[in-house]
Image (cartoon, rainbow, N blue to C red; front, side, top):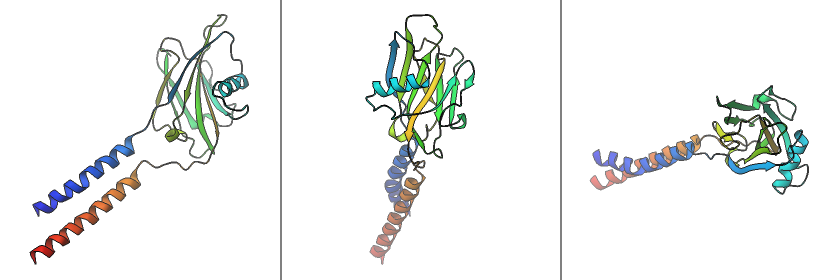
Length: 199
């Protein structure tokens, strides 16, 4: 019996450990860098056109979803309402935790765009662009931390993306169940082989 248990642990433990790791792994946003411009991007259409040009996308590729303004809250003037997104500014407003769940929206997230609009009348306008990893285009799988440069205040967070069906990958339960099933089959096979040698 001890041999059977040892074989079970040798066979199933690495598979279960790998399945647990895969189910917990996720990537962060892709930092596409800070931008300092000499003229402000006024309005959603100018921000969208800037991102498309900067990323080499044809004009009109992106869809504006929604934005959060630190002074007034959610704008709700895009393709999706604020129920799909989360933004929580830090106490000093230099970083923010953003999240999204677009699994039922018919869209997928491509970019998160930040603005420091506090330096009104200045000559430099600061922005920061983040791309979304392929595994998180529908769900952020937790909060993602964003910043302009860690010093400047975030005054605006906007979400842009494209239409897309949401075949959201589940959290790895299928892989875990498959691993358990394969481990059980191997255990039964080894038990039967053990009995065949005794008889």
